[in-house]
Length: 390
Figure (tube, rainbow, N blue to C red):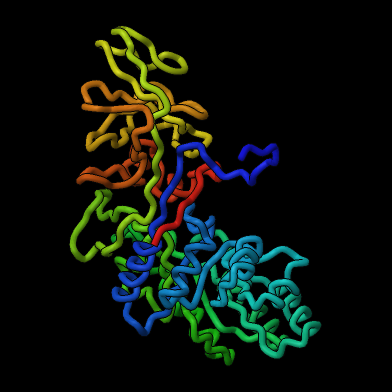
């Protein structure tokens, strides 16, 4: 029966990303097998789980046994708590003044590296009647971003000793070049980290959670695992290439049995028959050499399809690769489907993913765009609905 009432709107534009929670859980299990059951995993779900949907991914990981989750900020932690995620949540890049009481109330674990941060949390824990709120101390072993300098540890120790409502639960650092296997700075960083641990012990602190390893170090540097690791992109099926002597290398020892969890799809919006010598798209950077059948896709750089892969990338249509032609525009992309049998408006197109033995993944897009898979995944915009499947 017809009605003039306005129904709740759901996305109908045919561009979406499917996230396999089952593959995500398999990847988590692969990491746990790799590091062993004695090593804690802090599953990194910052940046909306690298574009995969933090709430849904955290729930699935918690169901699989994840006890720790890593986020950037309070803003990223709140939706997890509101969604019922009960595991420990580590705020990896600190907090803003004024957030400390909310962090204590939500039972979040802040990373600290300055005496002022410690004072704020001691005050918040005291005000809220919390006897022992855990904090993790970050040390700058050579990354040059966040963390206490080793020479400033005495002041930090003094501040912690003067904070009876806080407990130093963790010590962390971040490796600057874990994928470069002959990079001497990595061993220097690990030695510095161990030196800091010893100094803390001498001051009466023995944090049980020691963590330095990101995905690259999880795969290649067992000596960095300590009692906790922080895999991020590995959970979503990727890792950066490894290097030695300036060259990319591979091998059985440098692999982790993970698979991409995200498949990005769209559908053909329109089909156009073009003559030879026809310029296509903005600037006419691509010109047909012969008559061509061109499919118009309802996806563009506003959706996160990187403009740098214009006239370089490819998609999968009807069990065939089809090249992207012309410049990717804000909302539309052109692909050449000349000669592909039975191509029709409405046909499903894979932008990222594997099907029928063919594969276009974030590594391929990253290589063409001169960036990393992280940026490709995080760049898929909010305009693209995520459909989470078992």
